[in-house]
Figure 1 (tube, one colour):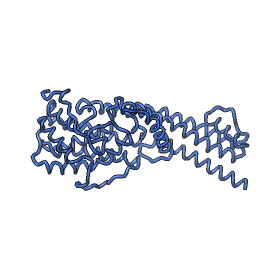
Figure 2 (cartoon, rainbow, N blue to C red):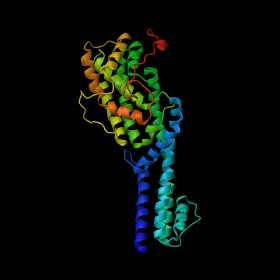
Figure 3 (cartoon, rainbow, N blue to C red):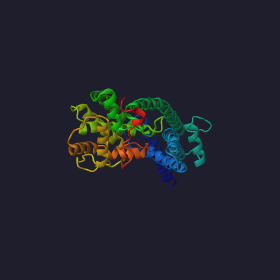
Figure 4 (cartoon, rainbow, N blue to C red):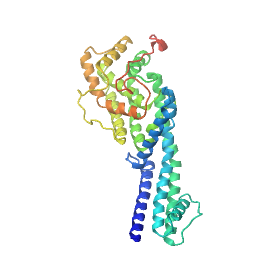
Length: 362
């Protein structure tokens, strides 16, 4: 019976170590999205703690200030979680191989993992376990140190485009304001370059925010900025131009929309968000016909040339929006994105124009 118990302890301990190492490899090394039970448990637990911490906050700015710590704290919490699980796993294996009591096995495990060297075993099997645990501990720490520059490089690249969008679409970003500003300042023919740049941005977003999942929760430096609402503004702007604006059709806008909804869907897949991968053009969306008409009225008042058939324009816009509507709204909720027209609120928001700030004559 004692031998059977030791076999079970060794196998269970080995399983815990494999689980921790696998989690670290998937998070730091594997260049693709991978569901992981440890990462999920850490971030879910932290989110509950942060939700409690936000209860006294009365404004969005206060909640944003608290949530700004969520991504970094979650990332740094992964290493202690992996080390604790590894320590527990090796404790079971040391005990199974005759290291003494559970306390003695725990001391040897902790000493080996942290390379302290104050507790050691007295035969070759224990020595081999000690060396392997010390190696795993060093590798995990080294991986985290190497991981941080990578994640902040991806964050910086993401936020550069988000900050530039504020110049073109306001803060929070609005698809309608983006189109109006291009009409007044650049000319709608210059939108092609914008679509090209954001197609690349979406491709990089998909790669970085699935392989480096903690990035999803890294918030923008300014409370009213968010990668989610920026993505929504660009997708809505491309959809509005395709559907309602009287300009020659630009296939690049189509490509940008497709790159965008594929990126958002890939990130949503990581979080287990359910959505229809093949929606019908007539499926309902969170933007109402009244809000679409309001947007068109604003654009018309701003001198944007619109197509005459408003019904067809609405059908076309809805057909584009349905591809990313649900994942956009859910990701905005998951990341606690700031309020923004059509992006962070399932009911949609009234279109915001800043005529007082900008002036129609500019």
